[in-house]
Image (cartoon, rainbow, N blue to C red):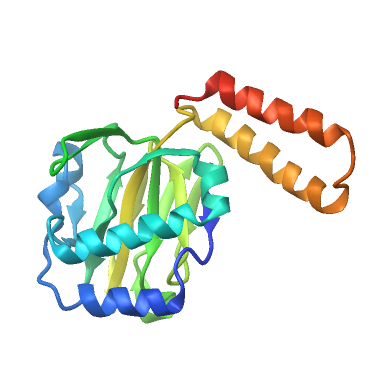
Amino acid sequence: MLLQIPNVLRSEQVSRFRSRIDAVKWVDGNVTSGHQSAQAKYNEQLPEESAEAHEIGQEIVRALGRNPLFFSAALPKHIYPPLFNRYCAEMKFGNHVDAAMRVHAPTGRRIRTDISATLFLTAPEDYDGGELLVEDTYGVHSVKLPAGDMVIYPATSLHRVTPVTRGSRVSSFFWIESMIRDDAQRALLFDMDMALVRLNQHASGHPSLVSLTGCYHNLLRMWGEA
């Protein structure tokens, strides 16, 4: 499931985050690459151990905790602390699939990467190129979102970032270990949850809502990993 989640951050937050991270010295993006990614990756990254990455990452995680659409779609168990990358002139990231496991070095926590996330921190009119291209059974999907919006997609997906030809593209990226490991099961639960939201808006007293809500939670109980 590929899903846009709008307004994860307010414009004030994006401006404040950018003023901090733009002033920091960036490093080669391959500091966090595996063998496969290192052959395709050409970008810059905010040092993972920097105070800016840590503090802003915590604010992003708190913002996600207040976002019901994110929770419904991802059903998060663990979120890898957000990282930050920058693509300037001709920088790109070729075709790759994200590693199945990530170890957060400061804590030693191992996180299974069920879902990949990109949170855009640059307005699309401020740069050319830099589209995130995600492939699935229905073709290639091009993603270039307003600053503050986020896209999530299965970490099993083949994806890439096209070369930036003007300006720079700054984003936060991270992974989610979901309570529901299987993407098809997550998508089914998300569709059911969205249908329940609509039914509560238009037929809030209907007795079938109790049964349908029970079905949702029983499926979550059946498939979920607490």
